[in-house]
Amino acid sequence: MNPKIAITVGDINGIGPEVALKSMTKKNVLHTARPFLIAPPKIVELYSKRLNLKFHIMLNEDDFSLEDGVINVLPMKDFKNFEINFGQPTKTSGKIAGESINLAVELCLAQRAHAICTAPVSKKALNLAGFNFPGQTEMIAKLSNSKKYLMMFVNSKIKLALVTIHIPLAKVSKILTRELLTDKIEILIDSLRLDFGINSPNIAILGLNPHSGEDGLIGDEEEKIIKPVIKLLHKKGFHIDGPFPADGFFGERKYKNYDATLSLYHDQGLIPIKLIDFYRTVNFSAGLNIVRTSPDHGTAYDIAGKLIANEKSMESAIILSAKIFKNRIKRKNENYSIS
Image 1 (tube, one colour):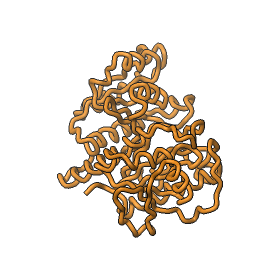
Image 2: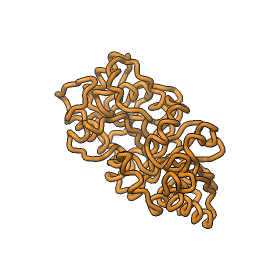
Image 3: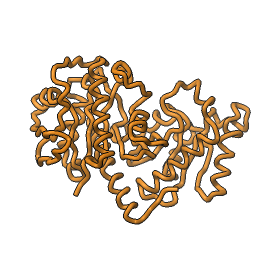
Image 4: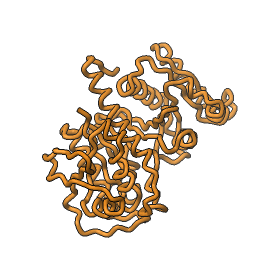
């Protein structure tokens, strides 16, 4: 039987509810997963009328009798009288988004749901509501008691992971250490094996500086940190190449030669991957105790409520969450253990 995927509503003032509801009706999604949406009934009713969708309100967390042919909704009953302000991050929208995440994680930890797919949120709104995290990845890691995690982006052409995530660019070189890089590479290797079934992955690492430092002339992080880590992991039998200058690596499409690429900071990886395939890329949180995916875009406040949002990334995210959960079960049955 297909796994149950808990879909969080995201920021109600953004496109989250729209892309979630649209995705949950797709045949390819329903062929792979049994999704249900965690949301206030008010927002579901609003969009269902406008999108001509039928929905079923589940009684509570213990009622998981999902109905076929309709949108299944686990209601957030504490949120009844609230304003929807399309295009604006508010304390209310942050509170709903945060509580939806809380409940989804609780259900996964209790094995009432098998995986989570989170709709886009506003970090500002979450902070206004008292959820003080840099992003959903960090929040879910904390809630799920996951000690290690790695932000990863996946589409049919590339798998790309980030060493650092939501930090100012000026701080990247300050926190980049051999220990951090080694830790992230090991999480990536374990995830490629456990979640994607790649037993002996080939990984490419990008350089931090222009021209990968050019032998220390334009920065020494490659010489002092990245190359020693690669050398050490080579001795352990891992297949890792680099550090590659990012511009030439993507310009020559060298990522096609590897199972995954490791980027040192956010925009170094996110810009090319969104150019490669913006609408079908999925954000996956590798290394967590639970399976969590998300679309690769934000709240898109500028088009919120206009019913023109593209749901393909959300659709792909739901499907990938189900596939990864199935892969983990398969590995467990094979008595697989991560390093």
